[in-house]
Image (cartoon, rainbow over all chains, first blue to last red):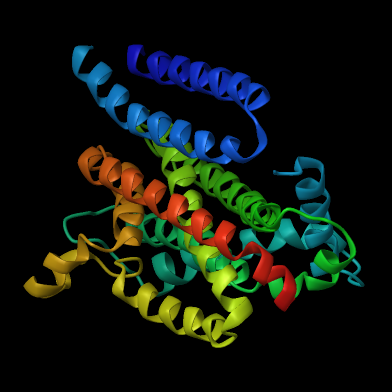
Length: 56
Length: 256
């Protein structure tokens, strides 16, 4: 349960932060920022989920 | 950059054009995944009697094939269609100022909708067969996102280069054929010779399909190390593809 909640919270947090930055950034940098966020988001997801599962 | 309303409009049109003139229309978008799923289950599981080594479940091979073929169809379909999307949509590009990556996004979205239909039917089948679901299934959207991001990177690079070298579209088709048979989708990786197993880890499709197999068939966790490595490589690929596209964007518009 903790792993599921942790992953969902991480997803919501990253979507909100990425959305906020997307609206604030200037045109050509947006895509590079999105790629960076996407990399952090996915890497984080694949780290958080097994980590929290082990903690359970 | 990405015109989301345009992406959605192109996706809707993709479905309506694909089945234009037919009596059932867009319903075919639901029927096709259902037919494919029925083939995987009935032909592979029942008629051919396929079994996985060490498993007595009569549906284990059907599940193995389905969770391999459904994502593969999305992956191969996205790459194949993306590779020629700039040429296919040149009539649109010449009329309105359109962002090129949006064209790839609509293909990804269209394939995702088909994937979702297929997976919905598949989950219904699993429910009917009293399949035991596990928490690792929560990772499916993340693995699928990684997969489609990978196709976006390959597709953007291929679409850009296809404008200058038309043969790339055909070469992609040939590569996809080899790639399909080099990835354990309809067979298990254990039957491969040692040297093939060693180079298999460099196959991105293997990492993705193997993750689905581990979660659905073996009730196991995917290899997080492989997924993280693929995540990093995929983002480098997307970054490189986008940079190449940006550098050639003006020429792409001129050539079209």
